[in-house]
Image (cartoon, rainbow, N blue to C red; front, side, top):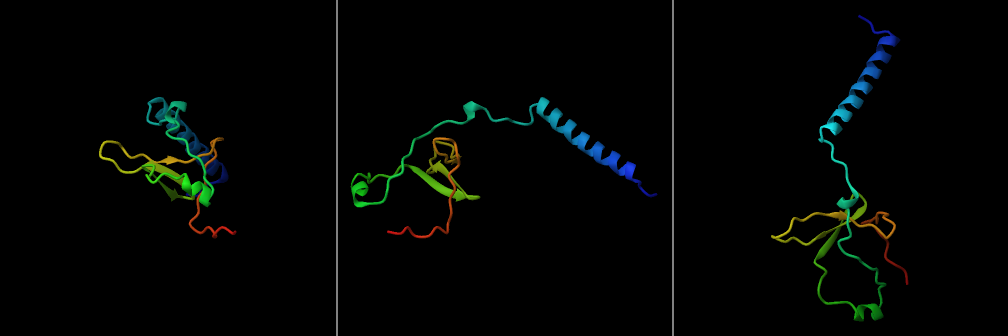
Length: 111
């Protein structure tokens, strides 16, 4: 049995239609979760301190109880492990909600 061009087009359209119907039905039943504005929130504000003797004198000796790590080229931050809280990582963004990228092969700064 050979398939002609019309049969192939019908099969493609049927497959796409089945996928769209599946996604719509999953969404209507609540199996697809959408993020809300309330899901994102500011946990802490950070500032960048330039390296130098003036800024180092004002640096606290205590750590911030947060750790940052690089994943898929983006900088993520999470609280350091604690038995009382769930450790959830979040994407570090700037004031305009642009993701901060990271690299493990940055050259040393000049100067």
